[in-house]
Image (tube, rainbow over all chains, first blue to last red):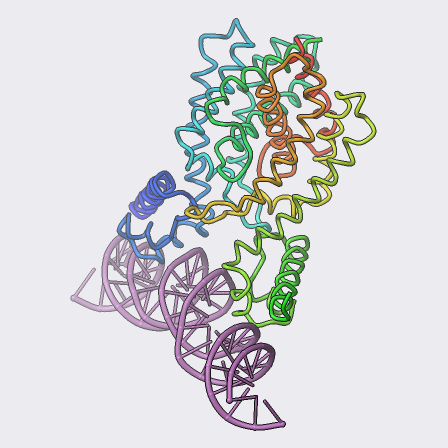
Length: 199
Length: 199
DNA sequence: AACAAAATTGAACGGCGTTCATTATTTTCT
DNA sequence: AGAAAATAATGAACGCCGTTCAATTTTGTT
């Protein structure tokens, strides 16, 4: 790689680092292009030499979070491959734990209002699909007679349901569950659902 | 009421109407104080004579939406008081129908980033609590042995789960369910859950 | 060293919510 | 009814935002 490309890549990485740090400490709402330029020691305009706009930069920071969640779910699924129901409950709780302990980056993932006309780059979509696969695996074990297409749908249903519970419980402005009750309720929901689905 | 108070109330109502209309047509993201002033034929500054800030105005518009959802859920719960499971499924589907057919106002309800320092007025909170009561009623019938406190928690769990499914399915940027599959999946989830809970 | 190409810069732009000195209106008092 | 006081309405101006682009500096080539 040429020197020029290397410096460009370095600046991109530094900016993503800075964005990640600022999102973690002050939240996506308080992210400012000028602050990021200060953080990495470049000019305001330089940001727009290496990113189309601030949204693309945010997307890269969010991708880091998506990868972290994937790691957390990979860990949660490990060691219980023979107990798929425990696996699903563990995944749900791991998702909540992450959201609870990294609320600001996690919220940034869903709060980010990407411009309406553009569409998301594929690597963000793929990052989300990868999360679903952690669910599909134990689910297929629990429902051996189900069509893969149905497993696909139920995985999305379960993820969305768990996500909703986590989201509203971490949101002060909505009547979600009290945080302390979330793990229990997640376990209840997942177990109850699967008893029903198995029939 | 004095003439002065009347005119103030009229301007407030007009602004809420305008905000509602603009949210419905262009979405919360494209709401502009200057546009609202034009819509109702007042000056920009007048908005701030009758509302603390734009967020309070949005909150009033959102309250209208909350009341509409309450109406929809009241209708859905009517006529099936003797079949509580059907009632719960109907409530879930009614919530999805509303969100699907009034996506922009419905999104505004959850996308609105209220300033962090202030806290929500109580009437918004009460509006949300009222929605939950539609769920608690059939739920208590289905789980006659459950403590009211547990029914309370499970109602929030179910609402959050359904909300999550609806939210992600209507969001182009996330891997939610395809819209056509949502009613089926909602029914599956609610029925499966309650079979599990009943045991 | 001289030149061309490319990257960097930050002042300036347009748009936003909000403010406040000024103006216009309504109410009160004689 | 008219003058004075209180109240409401106004919109230019402010500070902050993301973004742009002409001018400048740095890098690469001959």
